[in-house]
Amino acid sequence: MTRRHAFCHHSPLVASRKAAICLQLATGSSTPKFTMTKPREGRSRKQTTQLKAARAAAVAARSAPQKENLAPLSPSTKAAHHHQRRADAAEAEIARLKQKQKNAARRERRQKKKNADLNARLKAAEKDLQDAVAHGEAEVTKVLKKRSDHERGWQRRLNEAQRRLEEAESCRVWSTAELKKKLDALSQRKACAANARQARPRIQG
Image (cartoon, rainbow, N blue to C red):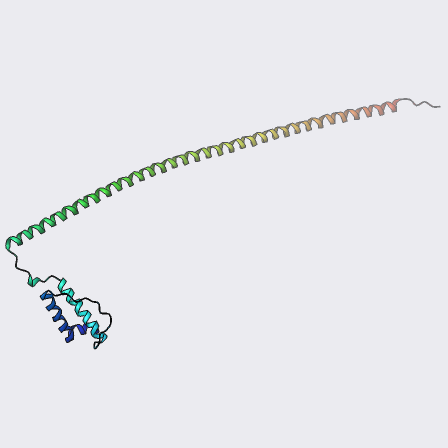
């Protein structure tokens, strides 16, 4: 318990001040204002603080409803108050349900919009996928065709080189045979010329 709390509960000064303020409230006199900021002559700062706390408690007590001063209600008034409370509760429930219905409709509209957006995004994604697949297939077909064209070109070049090699080989064989024939013929002519020189009689001088 703080010092202010203990003082408010046990100080006789606070009790006397409370009594004076209650008397002023009961007689309708003006309520003292809280304008004291400095301790007066013959009063300590602690007493000034306690007096301010007493005045604040008196103001709070005056603003609070006093149940003991209220007159007892009649049965008809109680019934009217009861029906009024029921009517207020019903109106509050109706307003709550209407607001709940509005919130549900708003959520449904948001969900529909979200579903529409998701469907549009799904269709766009499917179209992109189809385009990508078609483009990929076209690229693969192009690459395969290019590769097949290259293979056919290399095969054609290989066949051409093989044919040229075979022609060169046949030409070489033919040239070798022709050269051998020419060499044989030249050898025969040389032999015939040598035989003719030997058979020719020599002229003695």
